[in-house]
Length: 287
Image (cartoon, rainbow, N blue to C red; front, side):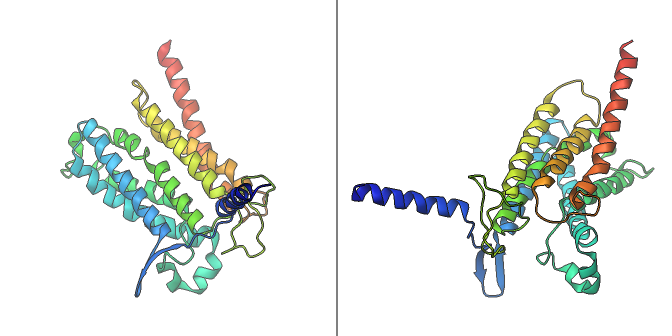
């Protein structure tokens, strides 16, 4: 082997080691007491893109964009509270109830995507009651059914989830199970034994982007039942989460499935029942 071939081989080995050994520093920038993490940056990008998409869809549907911004503020606050409470209640209740002040520090222990989903749903329900199910005047009542707005809101959520999972990869957290596959990744910053693991964060990010594209495609179709897109999001996203949980390393329960799978089941069952009922209604109307 020539000297040039040896250098090329060494370069390729270095590239492979960089790709499949995650030594990324989770801190993007430190300025005195201020620390900016990659996770926070990706979360902010995901939230900003989601708001922009919702505003654009409001405009395309002749809905007032200022109402979209107002609603997004509600959802950001409610989703963040739900995500944090989900992490506290679903994953580490013993620790957080022993250290209640830690609940306020969202950078300690992270956020729960299932908690975020519940937080968004509860916030939207409160918003509906405030603006639609009230005798008081509201700028939203002239904008048609709240169901049309619900179908719009779910579209960018998988995109936000994808950015969050990329942030998890930069944080070397939410690790996958051990694997011998060629694309396995080592996480020396949080997994000292240097086990090669499934890059489950990347799997989830790619699947979430696929769900986002499907939602957009479905939403553009005409003559769909109200809330069809909403329930498709619940089914597609939570079903994919249920399947991908089999490749995660942590949070197994005595039931033989993970906490994430247990939390996904109610959404999957509910959306499946809705689709069955909706199909029966369409069949009756077609007769």
